[in-house]
Amino acid sequence: MDALMASYASSSDDEDNAETILKKKPRLGGEDGSKDALLLLPSPVTLLDFSSNLSVKNVDSGNRIRSFPHVEGNYAVHVYIPVNISSIDKEELTSFVKKAGLLVPELHAIDTDLPLCPGNIKNKDGAHVDVSTLAEEYHISLSRTVAIRVHQIDSIVGMLRNKLHSQKRYWIEFGKWEVFINDDQTRSFLALEVTTRGLSEISKQICIVDEAFRLHNLPEFYKNPRPHISVAWGLGDITSKLKKVAEELNNLKGNTCSKRKSVWTYPFSRIECKIGQKVYSICKLTK
Image (cartoon, rainbow, N blue to C red; front, side, top):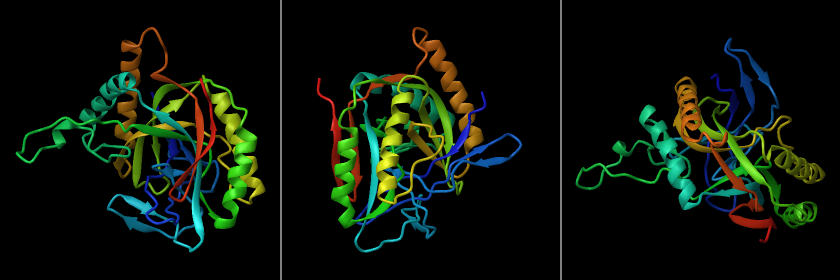
């Protein structure tokens, strides 16, 4: 299968209450090399997809690019759905991800940045050790990550809570493995994309967040969002390798999960907003 390519920026943490954001411009690439620009504005990344429409770039820790310059009094804001991995789901998903690591040894786990291939990890005695290839929590972005001023924080948090307080529980279906690449082609990503169940609800939530951002003169999300969680990354443009991996994992899913079409399902339960180093609860469903 030909995995559709979209841009996805790499991740990085804020180190001081300032904003550390990566530039991300979504594009669809055809086999003939043509590219349709969906939206020439930045988008989320990081621990939570950081991005910005500012073009100043700085290399950070060897594999991350920061394009959001520090401005005193500015904070990075990002709205997202947390996605937690249970021990049972983690065991099943890990088998997929380790398979990807064996096929492409240069892949690293999102968040931990550890190589997916267990053979790449050795203890102090030089023996190979196995490691967990999945983080405890991922996220589905509902907004870009952009900069706001300190006086806007209470206003945007209050508005988001007011507009999203009546959310109901629904199931999110990650239907297939997909390949993404950032605009600068410095990082490629292996991700699980939301395909059917939950896509409509997430799209509505994005529209609500867009309205709040628009009223605060902040950039809205993409015109054609593709909700997903990224689970692995590799340096440079290795999309040709990853498309083969995605195809093999999707075939593996079909063989091992004959009773269900999705790779994994997850119950929506809350929305959070990270501003600087602080995380605000926007809505949280109770059982």
